[in-house]
Length: 289
Image (cartoon, rainbow, N blue to C red; front, side):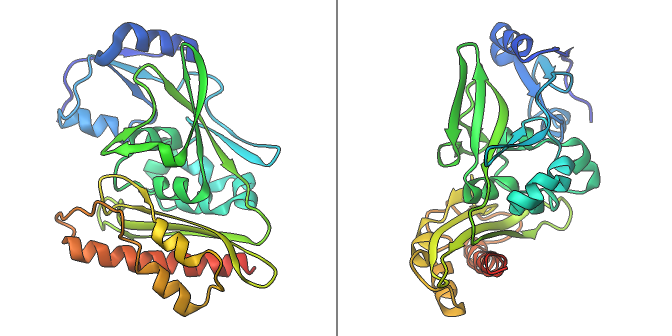
C-alpha cells in the first residue's frame, strides 16, 4: 500500500512550521512520529498534499521538573516517557502508561504529543491525561494558550488544538503526598490498543479517607472521558473493597460505548467496570506505599 503523492517539509523551528501551516492550510498535516498518520495515508484514509515533519524542530522534546510540574515536550517519544527518572519519581502512572503502548518499535518512534493530538479513541495515554490532570500547551501565530485535559478531547480523533496551532508541550502536576495512580487495560491481541482502558488516581489523608479521585476511561467509546460517577463514589470514603466495587459500577456512565468486532455494548460496558475497579485498587495500593 502506498500513499498518494505529497510534498515533504522539514521546518527548523516552531515559527517556520506555523508559517507552513498558515500558508498550506487544510492541505497540510503535521508528522510527529508517524505511527498514526502514515498508516492512514497508506490506506488512503488521509491524503494530505503536504506533510510537515516536526522531528527537526528544536525544543520540542525532553522532560523536566518545573517547580512541581513536569513539562514534557510534545515530540518526546513514548520510550523517553516510559524511562524518565523524573516521571517515575513524580508521577509514575504516566511512565507506566507509556510502557504499555504498542510495542518497542512504536514506543521508540511514536511521540506523546502526536498520540494526544491524534486522539485515537483506543489510545492509552488519553485516559491517564484525564486522571493525572494534564494541561496542553498549544502555540499559534498569536502566541501560546493552555488547555486542560477535560477540555482537550472533543470527539472521534478531534481535540482542542486549532488548525493553525501546534501542540508544543504537556504539563503534568507531580503527585501530592498520599497519592497513587494506575492505568490498566484489556488490550487488543494484535495492535495492543485498548479495547477498554482505565486510569485512576487517588489521594488519601492520614486516616485513609479519599480526599481526591480522578478516573479516565478510554477504548470503549468515541473519545476518552472522565468517569464522574466513579469519582463521586470514591471521594470522602474509606476505599475498602466494597466501596471500590460500588463506585466502579458507574464506570460506563457517560461513555458513548460503541459495539465493534471486539465486543458488544454490554460486554465493553462490563470491561469498563472491571478495569476501573482494578485500576482503583492498584492506585490505592500505591497510595498506601
